Image (cartoon, rainbow, N blue to C red):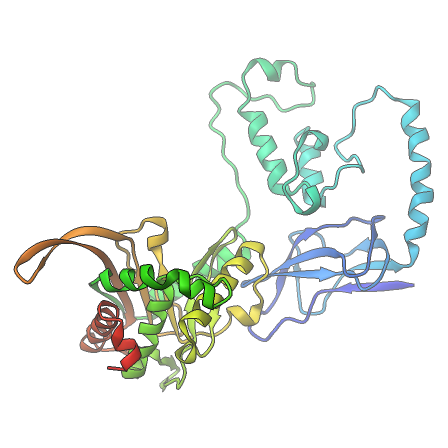
Length: 406
């Protein structure tokens, strides 16, 4: 029985998706719940799994095609897996007739996506010579691109011995590579331009002495980790906690503009910018104002792992009333973060550096961090923005204020 392979139901915030990778091709056997195809949306990559055991009968939407919610991607013949070994039995005989022949670019023993197979054939690359980095050793399109680049950059003596069908590369050629922008990257670009075009965006700066936070963390990090089942105490939880406290005192910073209305949020859903192989993603800590330090750290660690594995859900990426980004993890000294619409502000953390500071008339060395708050001036006045940032600074320089609510 033929079973339709359909795209998942997209939420209202996602209009469509793009077929990113087919992990199976027509004729391949699949098991129930095995990954068949990846759909890339503006926010996340959604995995489509097999509904039953069988064989892929047809691919309707190819890699790079745009698909709508629940649209047909292909078809699966249920229970047809038993026919595959019979077809494969004739393969050894066929191979035996020409044992000296080199494997073709489309060798069935090598697991390739259709896009990777096509690219390998066009460039005269033998897939068996490529080490796959995908799931289960699968050769991805990126692996083939890397192999093509390596072939182009090989010493001049080697191309001379290559088959006549291989493209000739003159010494000194200036190689360029053109690849389509991912949907996530395109969406990020669109939103960044939108923010700068539609907002009266300003940035205010301050600096925070991290001495007390670092001393507190150093003193209790081992006990914290032991008491909270391996959750590590980092700096981000202090910043989230300080930010949520400041948001309570300055509701406009936690608000958003909807048409001609201002929407004040009675909760703090804090987005935490996380770097992934696909680009920058911003999963959201819901009701962060009521979370403990351990819950915040656990949530951030979970988001980080999901981002690396490409497992973040659309729900985890949607919403948010305020965002925190930490360029300091990459060594950033200073930046002007861009507000994530329709939010009104974003807090930027930076690198902690030992710097000479004047304390009570004495020059001392202190661990200092620059803070940046970018905000929508249509909604937030300069005085409010500066005072908000100073509040965060004061809470971090004297963490007891977070406990005493002062």
